[in-house]
Image 1 (tube, rainbow, N blue to C red):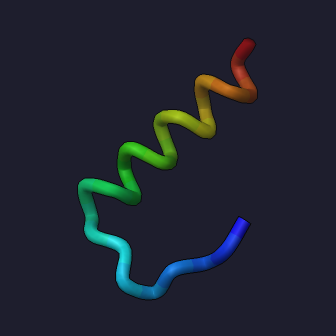
Image 2: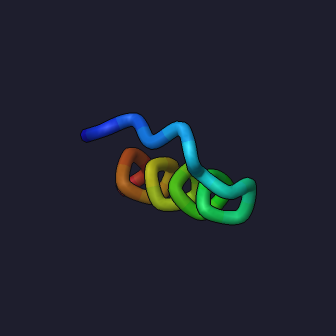
Length: 25
């Protein structure tokens, strides 16, 4: 994955939620 410095707060929160779900399965 590439680290984008121009990540909005909403996008970061969504990405975090998706990551949590991916690791929760």
